[in-house]
Amino acid sequence: MVNTVDTTAGAPEGTAAPRPGYGQLLRTPGAWTFLLPGFAARQPFAMLTIGIVLLVQHTSGSYGSAGIVAAVTGVSMALFAPQNGKLADRFGQRAVLVPGVLLHAVSVTALTVLALSGAPLWALFAAAVPTGASVPQVGPMVRARWAALLGSSEERARLLPTAAAFESVTDEFTFVIGPVLATALCTGVHPAAGLIAEGVLTLAGGLLFAARRRTQPKPAGRPAGGWKRAGGSERAEGSGGSAGSAGSVGARVSALSVPGVRVLAVVFLGIGSVFGGMQVSLTAFAEEIGNPGANGLLYGVFAAGNMLAGIACGAVAWKIGPRRRLIAGYAGLTLAASGLWAVHSVPALAALGLLVGLFIAPALISGYTLIEPLVPAGARTEAFTWLTGSVALGQAGAVTAAGQLADAHGASAGFVVPLVGTALALVTLVALRSRLTPKAPGRVAARGMGHRVPVAVD
Image (tube, rainbow, N blue to C red; front, side, top):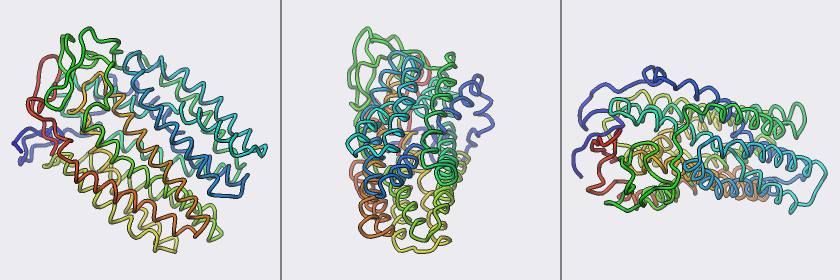
């Protein structure tokens, strides 16, 4: 390994140069024009799975059935999200987002009506597929806008890790609000109220975000030349710009052709297993103790830990690269998840859930930060959606497994799922960590038009 500039710290390794903070990031010209609508548009994302689980469990009486329907939604989202990202890179975010949110609103309505009418399970599956496929990928789209906005100069590029941390905090804030809001609506208003609110908010927020056209990355369209692999990274031929120049590359080659993206996609399944396993198992735990309302509180504490860790990660001037931070975060996450199954009281479960949440943000932020040096600008939205889709796929599998275990053996058994998922992901990460480093001569990441600086990812 060679000494290079770690852009996650904004200074050579081993130095303690100050790092750009949130204040400087939020003063970036044009940032607020997409941040506020983007925040509104992603709020419903965290409501979808828990809304489906609570509604279907109410109508069917089975956590297993509820988990399977939610899992079908998650698998569908995982399969279609990268394609939506690729289309957004090629044709623009608005062209994909507007029809997507309209389809999502119709699909959620159909799923709700079918569940309330006592439709068979196969009918719920049929409605769950378009519901998941049409989930708007607002988080990856916001990250792509940050990459395009900040990647135009070396000075601004130093803010990219801070932007990744900020987006993690924003995501986790939605996971503080979303499950609590959905649970309150389902338990206090009507079992379908959470899912209905998700559909309405997705439609309104998505259209508002799509209207902010000036900050969306320039559509890549079809590349005039082609693509070739250069030292483990990808760049465009005949594009007239560098790999890091937004809009200078095409979208004909999938971001999944980059080895590091494939590794991260597999590793992020473990994070999804935590989200899915915690949602179902906390719901089952709250039912077991006769206090359904505790579910929203417990999941909110778990998500709050994630949010607080995200704030801290963005404020620290790291002396190590994101690859090491990713491994350390996953090791801590696995250790924290190992005790969930043995806890049987609300205060203890809240405390351990908070600890689990504290380790998720470092892993998420480090993974998203690694995308910038590994993937060309014209494929980053797709790359981000591969990671988001992997979280959804891991969540889907965890919801199914935890639901079956909770039905058969109680909530404690469901908490085994996050432990197994994170442990397997950690083993994969350690074994394949070398693929997260761009190889020479691709150990450089472009900064603006024709300007490159070395990047450390260790």
